[in-house]
Amino acid sequence: MPKLPAPPIPKALRAKPKRPGENGNGNGKPSTAQVVQEAGITAVDWIDERTSLSGGIRWMLFRKVPRGVNWFYTLGSATMFAFLSQAVTGVFLAMFYRPDATGGAYESMRYIVDDAFLGQFVRGMHKWGASVMVILIFLHMGRVFFFGAYKYPREMTWIIGVVLLILTLAMSFTGYLLPFDDRAYWATIVGVNINGTAPFLGPYLSDFLRAGPEFGANTLSRFYAIHMLLLPALIIALIGAHLYLISKLGIAAPPWLKSHEEPDLDVAEV
Amino acid sequence: MADKHKENLSKYTVDLNMPGAFEGETVTRRRFMNVTVQGLGGLAAAAFTLPALGFALGPVFSHEPFEWQIIGKSDDFQPLVYSLRVVTLVANVGEAGKSTAYVRKRDPAIDTEPADEFNQIIAVTSRCSHLGCPVRWVESAARFLCPCHGGIYDFRGLRVAGPPVRPLNRFYTLIRNGYVYLGPMYSVNSELERFSNRDPGQPVDGIGQFLYPRRFSTSVRPPTNNLPAPPPGVPAG
Image (cartoon, rainbow over all chains, first blue to last red; front, side):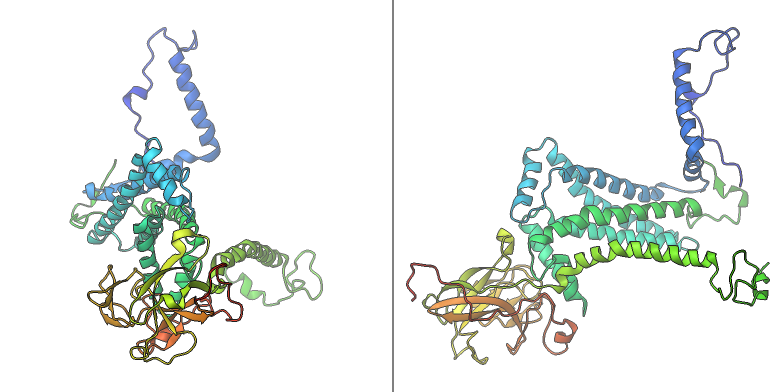
């Protein structure tokens, strides 16, 4: 295995050369800064010696990337940060939300938006962030498609990405019911009935989504559980697999880069 | 090395000089452990996966009992005028379990489908058979209009225009002691023949009834010999 490049340490953190007679020659006490620095190094070393995490982190972050990468390559990360934002805001919204179809759900949403401190802001982040995530995931897919980055050997990354797209849309569908106002209710009625138009299995899929033949008491809790437990777990697992494959296979060069003409210059270190 | 196993054609562990091998033994201990551990692991995983899956899928295969409900006296309804009634499809979920029905008396001049005891009062659901939005009866147009995607139905609930795939669903109704009882919903095709309750968007004409089969969860028509009592103190009309 080739030697991995050392992480670039900022100038402020690099050890300064010692002056004659100064601390560190074995005589005299170390300064407070040195003690703190030493403590930090010791703690990190303790973990690294037992987990070898630094190798994995360097493998992940200090990769060679092709020349010519540009801002379009950040769309995937942007989607991931949109998801992280959804996850964080969603966790805190769940602390106030009640999936109660008899009126508690709407009342808890009203409390979040009207009364809770920063509730309207956090709920707004979650609501608008959902749209942002869907837009970003489509832009990211468009980038990968038009740059041809889905081709060998990255087909598996593409397939996982498509599953992530479907899961994201499923998140949008299940999350839309949760405010439990008229718009949410009727949109879900229509959405479930659209699912039901699939031949043969459609009627049973509708019953599964509704937890019964009609929209009932368990429909909202079912959507809530899928929205905040099942789908996030799957998405987190698949994002992990997506990132692993990206690190393993490297980033595809932009299609206009003619690497065969300048074989020495087709990689640049970051 | 690759051919090493090919040479050992004997299936008996004794012939392979394995320590502890006994006469007639064919399964090596390594293989026995592999099968056992994988089998037990699979069993343990199935022990929590299958019940959880069955639990999640249960509502598809079970159906809730449906009770007849009183929607008024038989004198409350006229032959050519629709009255709006709020009906309860799912109990104990408040507004989310309610729906509406347009109710009128049967008029043999208009209602040409065969009469029986369940359609002396015609109760048409407000649920659009396109995707389930609530239709409303517009008197000036003499049509049911759907606000979502423009479905239009005539006085009997038959599709006139727009995306709906079949007429509006109906409810079983029953007149007993002057009261009108409302039962579960059923679907009808364009000839107003009865089919078990289908969801909106699922045609029942022609091949449609086979593409969208009957669900296990559909409420069956409850027996008519055990109707809930009318409200006390109100004389039957």
